[in-house]
Amino acid sequence: MKELHNRILKDGHALSETVLKVDSFLNHQVDPNLMYEMGTYFKNYFKEHEITKIFTIESSGIAPAVMTAMQMNLPMVTLKKQSSKILNGDVYQTTVHSFTKAMDYELTLSKKYITAEDRILIIDDFLANGEAALGAARLVEEAGAQVAGIGIVIEKSFQPGRKVLEDKGYEVYSLARIAKLGEGLIEFVE
Ligand code: G4P
Image (cartoon, rainbow, N blue to C red; front, side):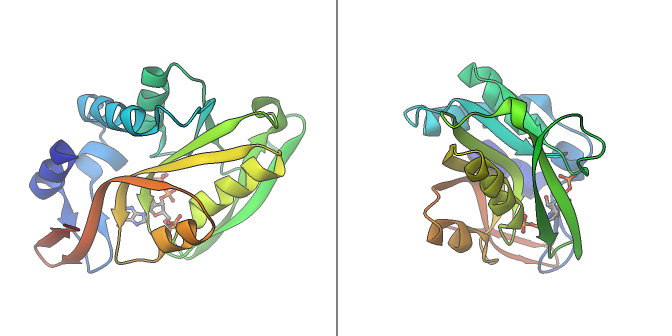
């Protein structure tokens, strides 16, 4: 997505060889026009995939996911990083390990918001090791539903996430694929 590449080059900062800071338009302040454009790209890519619902993981996946849901005229569900005690009723829950943040969290989905007939598009802001997307996929499959695709805003292609997800048979579509980060350096996959 050309607009996203340009924005990453203009406003993104490589904090190290592994972390890209994009606080000014995605992770802290949000640019709604850019999010809307992301929704257009995801809709165009996944429009023939018979998607019934969009899932995302709180919190930075919400903006691109809601724009995609709006454009596809589908409901959007946020997977919570909360324990089941906080949510009422029956839930599906799985533990996700974040290598970037060196912590575990519980990903939670109310059983009310998925059925076995659903075909889910998972949208998230970053793909690093693929653990968050794998956790979301586990919840979908526990409900007997299908993962119809995974849409990522920024994929760090030098980390194993895409391979991990593709090896499990999931289709991954990323709007920006970063090949290399370094001091003052941001390179995209050709
Ligand atoms: P994984 O799911 O691909 O395995 O990724 P990982 O757990 O390692 O990433 C954990 C969190 O760190 C996620 O945010 C993810 O968006 C974020 N993250 C990973 N790499 C980068 C990066 O290079 N830049 C930025 N800005 N974020 C990165 P989160 O904990 O879910 O937080 P949030 O969604 O509330 O922002």
